[in-house]
Image (cartoon, rainbow, N blue to C red; front, side):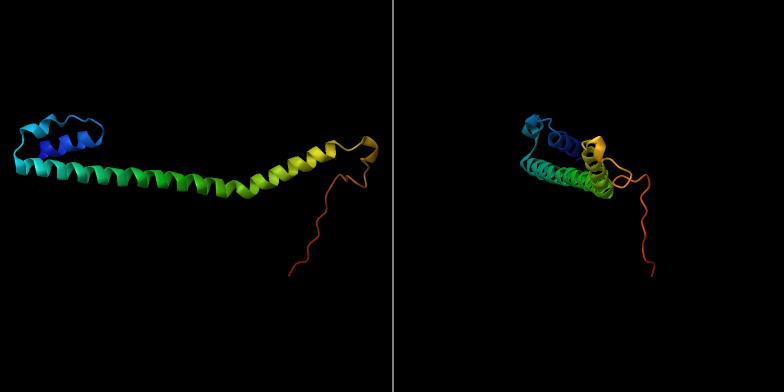
Length: 106
């Protein structure tokens, strides 16, 4: 019985040597193919679950860094636009050295 399980597992992983089923009785042959089908379904479910888990982890990683990347791209676009200004337009009034932010506290 254990030998049939290992042969079925090998078949499910791509080792398509069906010669072992030629030496089985009818009942054993039915059991052989039932085991093969079950192992095939279970391994596919496990592999699909793994793929879904990896895709979810990648999505969470991107989602956690999304806001920072958006602000970084906005800052680089602003810096690029400021570099295109003529030097005569780059005054202290238009481009102060420090930015002061004032907020009302509740």
